[in-house]
Length: 447
Image (cartoon, rainbow, N blue to C red; front, top):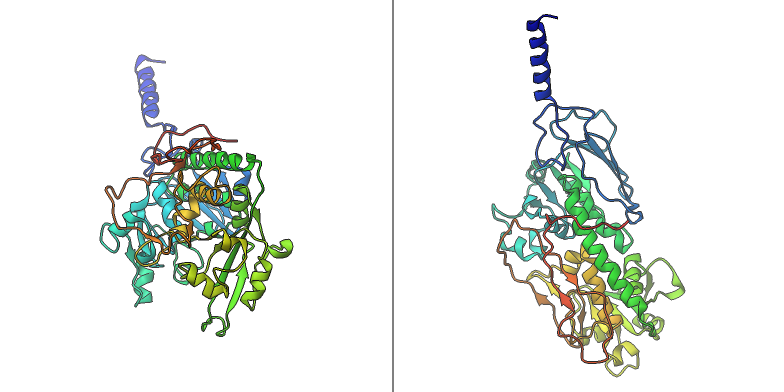
């Protein structure tokens, strides 16, 4: 081989090396700009999967990832922007990371906020006025915040939500008609700890699996610590029932009814707080009654009631709705143990329990522990976030619109744990609000 030939070969090798693709060490936050290489794993940061996420399963390939949502029976394929679109069968095939979204209801908001994705929400089909997030309310229906879709023109509304990368919806007719719709069923996932896993679902569309792993692990670790503390307290477990009154209306043939809920996530909260979940006959479906006296007879031995009546407020309203009075001998009346889940609302009666409470399960559990096991979280030491005692607080606390940095991730509240019964006076505070930035370094993950 001549010297000239050898030189040409060497230059060719050097050139090919310069063009060779380099495997990323973190998930890309933009389109691939280097040469595509089918042997490279473009998703080095993968979502941690546990048995708690049985309704969501993830499969990673080198340049695309597949999500199966068992609740909606949807298969979503997400492929790295800048790589070939995979030739697969799926409900939706979407290039990631996506830029923006529309949402159908308030239950989705906090998931995006905890991941630092508040600014990615462009439209709401369910009404921005019902969103409780102070940051969202501070910029509601402005160019820098979330906009309501056109409620007067369906064609225009569809144009609006089709203009974003993905339209997340749950039983929303308008969203289901969009050509970019994806089901978001977190509030339908039956168990409490199933719902935290939807952080990962959102994150996969933005290649933010590492962030979801970190935030989710912090939340889950705190929940498990609180659960362990509550279950270790060797005391009698009070009975807790979730009840509701439905006033006569056009939606129920103008016939009043009363009910006791059997929802799994409510059972999880009560048992994880150290209480006994009460449902007549231990059935798995809601039990309805045609008279308040029949319901009261069913809960006559219950210690604590969670009143889920829409628009309920104070003790007087409860007595009217349920046909009883302050002189009744029920334990939940005499011990003043009737609570509602509406402690925190916005000015339009948007309930934060059905927004932040969907994913901030550790805080909800702490609320239930303070009600079920007050020796662990006394009223003097802990101020509930979502649960309101109707005897001591006659109306919800109204959240004001405020935000110092709209694009910043929401701070995750972590309850100080483990909890301990103190023989002396309780500590000044049982809750430590820790700012867990969504982009913080990943912490050690649970198996």
